[in-house]
View 1 (cartoon, rainbow, N blue to C red):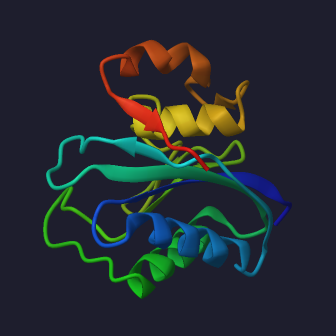
View 2 (cartoon, rainbow, N blue to C red):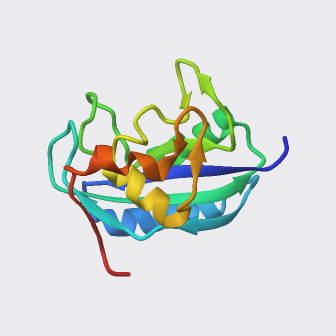
Length: 161
Protein backbone atom coordinates (compact mmCIF):
# COMPACT_ATOMS: atom_id res chain seq x y z
CA UNK A 1 0.00 0.00 0.00
CA UNK A 2 1.23 3.52 -0.82
CA UNK A 3 1.98 5.63 2.25
CA UNK A 4 -0.89 7.72 3.59
CA UNK A 5 -1.06 10.33 6.32
CA UNK A 6 -3.18 9.04 9.18
CA UNK A 7 -4.47 11.11 12.07
CA UNK A 8 -5.13 9.44 15.42
CA UNK A 9 -7.04 10.98 18.31
CA UNK A 10 -5.74 10.10 21.78
CA UNK A 11 -7.67 10.49 25.01
CA UNK A 12 -7.53 9.32 28.62
CA UNK A 13 -9.27 10.25 31.86
CA UNK A 14 -8.31 7.45 34.26
CA UNK A 15 -4.99 6.91 36.00
CA UNK A 16 -1.96 9.03 35.05
CA UNK A 17 -3.49 10.24 31.80
CA UNK A 18 -0.51 12.40 30.77
CA UNK A 19 1.94 9.52 31.20
CA UNK A 20 -0.43 7.21 29.34
CA UNK A 21 -0.66 9.61 26.38
CA UNK A 22 3.14 9.87 26.27
CA UNK A 23 3.47 6.07 26.32
CA UNK A 24 0.83 5.73 23.60
CA UNK A 25 2.73 8.20 21.40
CA UNK A 26 5.91 6.13 21.85
CA UNK A 27 3.95 3.00 20.89
CA UNK A 28 2.56 4.74 17.79
CA UNK A 29 6.07 5.84 16.78
CA UNK A 30 7.25 2.23 17.06
CA UNK A 31 4.48 0.69 14.93
CA UNK A 32 5.60 -1.39 11.98
CA UNK A 33 4.69 0.38 8.75
CA UNK A 34 4.48 3.80 10.41
CA UNK A 35 6.92 6.70 10.49
CA UNK A 36 7.22 10.46 10.89
CA UNK A 37 5.06 10.77 14.01
CA UNK A 38 4.06 14.32 14.94
CA UNK A 39 1.88 15.15 17.93
CA UNK A 40 -0.23 18.09 18.99
CA UNK A 41 -0.12 19.66 22.40
CA UNK A 42 -2.09 17.98 25.18
CA UNK A 43 -5.53 19.48 25.71
CA UNK A 44 -7.80 19.23 28.79
CA UNK A 45 -11.52 18.85 28.14
CA UNK A 46 -14.63 17.98 30.09
CA UNK A 47 -16.19 14.62 29.19
CA UNK A 48 -18.62 14.78 26.24
CA UNK A 49 -21.50 12.27 26.41
CA UNK A 50 -19.53 10.63 29.22
CA UNK A 51 -18.72 10.98 32.89
CA UNK A 52 -15.73 10.94 35.19
CA UNK A 53 -12.76 13.28 35.47
CA UNK A 54 -11.67 15.64 32.71
CA UNK A 55 -9.95 14.09 29.73
CA UNK A 56 -6.50 14.77 28.40
CA UNK A 57 -6.50 14.64 24.61
CA UNK A 58 -4.07 14.98 21.73
CA UNK A 59 -3.86 14.14 18.05
CA UNK A 60 -0.99 12.38 16.30
CA UNK A 61 -0.15 12.41 12.61
CA UNK A 62 1.93 9.67 11.03
CA UNK A 63 2.81 8.24 7.67
CA UNK A 64 1.66 4.65 7.29
CA UNK A 65 1.67 1.86 4.77
CA UNK A 66 -0.87 -0.03 6.87
CA UNK A 67 -4.39 -0.28 5.49
CA UNK A 68 -7.05 1.42 7.65
CA UNK A 69 -8.29 -1.78 9.30
CA UNK A 70 -4.71 -2.93 9.96
CA UNK A 71 -3.93 0.38 11.63
CA UNK A 72 -7.16 0.18 13.64
CA UNK A 73 -6.17 -3.28 14.91
CA UNK A 74 -2.75 -1.93 15.94
CA UNK A 75 -4.42 0.98 17.78
CA UNK A 76 -6.75 -1.37 19.63
CA UNK A 77 -3.79 -3.54 20.66
CA UNK A 78 -2.10 -0.45 22.15
CA UNK A 79 -5.32 0.39 24.03
CA UNK A 80 -5.47 -3.12 25.48
CA UNK A 81 -1.84 -2.93 26.64
CA UNK A 82 -2.86 0.18 28.59
CA UNK A 83 -5.79 -1.51 30.31
CA UNK A 84 -8.60 -0.27 28.07
CA UNK A 85 -11.94 -1.76 29.01
CA UNK A 86 -15.29 -1.21 27.30
CA UNK A 87 -17.92 -1.87 30.01
CA UNK A 88 -20.43 0.51 28.34
CA UNK A 89 -20.58 3.15 25.62
CA UNK A 90 -18.51 6.25 26.45
CA UNK A 91 -17.22 4.79 29.72
CA UNK A 92 -14.25 6.56 31.34
CA UNK A 93 -11.04 5.10 29.97
CA UNK A 94 -7.36 4.60 30.57
CA UNK A 95 -6.69 5.13 26.85
CA UNK A 96 -8.77 5.77 23.75
CA UNK A 97 -7.20 5.78 20.29
CA UNK A 98 -9.47 6.79 17.42
CA UNK A 99 -8.48 6.61 13.77
CA UNK A 100 -9.76 9.98 12.55
CA UNK A 101 -8.46 10.10 8.98
CA UNK A 102 -6.44 7.78 6.77
CA UNK A 103 -5.36 9.73 3.71
CA UNK A 104 -8.43 10.34 1.56
CA UNK A 105 -10.07 7.05 2.59
CA UNK A 106 -13.83 7.02 2.88
CA UNK A 107 -15.34 3.89 4.36
CA UNK A 108 -18.13 2.69 6.61
CA UNK A 109 -17.89 -0.81 8.03
CA UNK A 110 -19.01 -2.32 11.30
CA UNK A 111 -15.50 -1.80 12.65
CA UNK A 112 -14.51 1.56 11.20
CA UNK A 113 -15.96 4.72 9.65
CA UNK A 114 -13.63 7.15 7.89
CA UNK A 115 -13.49 10.04 8.25
CA UNK A 116 -14.38 9.57 11.91
CA UNK A 117 -18.08 10.50 12.05
CA UNK A 118 -17.76 13.05 14.87
CA UNK A 119 -14.29 14.53 14.32
CA UNK A 120 -15.75 17.85 13.15
CA UNK A 121 -18.16 18.09 16.11
CA UNK A 122 -15.74 17.66 19.02
CA UNK A 123 -13.41 20.43 20.22
CA UNK A 124 -11.14 17.82 21.84
CA UNK A 125 -10.45 16.40 18.37
CA UNK A 126 -10.79 19.40 16.10
CA UNK A 127 -8.58 21.85 17.99
CA UNK A 128 -5.52 19.58 18.35
CA UNK A 129 -6.05 18.32 14.79
CA UNK A 130 -6.00 21.86 13.43
CA UNK A 131 -2.99 22.65 15.61
CA UNK A 132 -1.10 19.96 13.66
CA UNK A 133 -2.57 20.71 10.24
CA UNK A 134 -4.31 24.13 10.10
CA UNK A 135 -5.39 23.78 6.46
CA UNK A 136 -6.46 20.13 6.68
CA UNK A 137 -9.45 19.05 4.62
CA UNK A 138 -11.42 15.86 5.14
CA UNK A 139 -13.40 13.94 2.52
CA UNK A 140 -17.03 15.00 2.67
CA UNK A 141 -16.30 17.72 5.22
CA UNK A 142 -14.05 20.13 3.34
CA UNK A 143 -11.75 22.47 5.28
CA UNK A 144 -11.93 21.43 8.92
CA UNK A 145 -11.34 24.98 10.16
CA UNK A 146 -14.82 25.79 8.84
CA UNK A 147 -16.28 23.47 11.52
CA UNK A 148 -14.77 25.24 14.54
CA UNK A 149 -18.03 27.13 15.10
CA UNK A 150 -19.82 23.84 15.80
CA UNK A 151 -17.53 23.31 18.80
CA UNK A 152 -17.69 26.88 20.17
CA UNK A 153 -19.58 25.86 23.32
CA UNK A 154 -17.11 23.11 24.23
CA UNK A 155 -14.24 24.08 26.51
CA UNK A 156 -10.81 22.83 25.44
CA UNK A 157 -7.69 24.12 27.16
CA UNK A 158 -4.23 23.63 25.63
CA UNK A 159 -1.85 22.61 28.41
CA UNK A 160 1.74 23.82 28.63
CA UNK A 161 4.40 21.44 27.25
